[in-house]
Amino acid sequence: QRAEANKSVREMDAKVAEASKLARKSQQQLMAQQSQLQLLENEQQALETKLEKQKRTLAALIRSAYAVGKAPTLELVLSQDKISDSSRALAYHRYFQADQKAQLDAISRQLQELSAMTEKVRLQQHQFEQAKLAQEKNLSALSAQRKERDQALAKVDAQYRDKKTRLNALGRDEKNLN
Image (cartoon, rainbow, N blue to C red; front, side, top):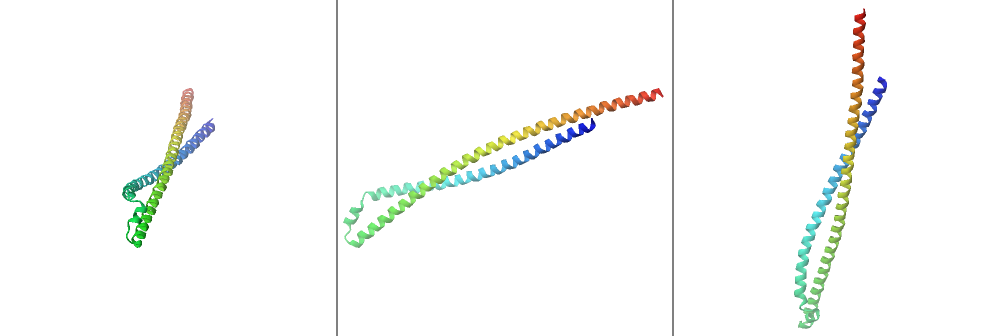
């Protein structure tokens, strides 16, 4: 019986050790995911800040395009006295339009990056929540196994105390008979 009780306690200890190992592992995973989530959120914040700056630049471009738009390209060419002045005005106009297009393309790319980053953050948050649930499950399993182990130890201890009490009683009875 004693060997069986010891075997039972060893099995309980092994289960508790395994559950503790799982709890530590899930805690490490949880911390790593939280760190990754923080990095993604910081990157998203930087992209949002950059996008706000681009929006202000775009607003300025729109205002300047509106101001330039009042004098169409043909009017610029026809209003010049010299051909060199009109070609220079056309060149500036082309540069201005090319710059506007480049800035609009940059804003479009940043919007796409921000959208992708937002999706990454959402996915990382979901994974973090899943890891948190797994951690809670592992901790409750660990708690249950520790409780089961404590009950088994209490049972074995009670059996030994009962046997020791009986042995002491038999010893006293034997002394009384002699």
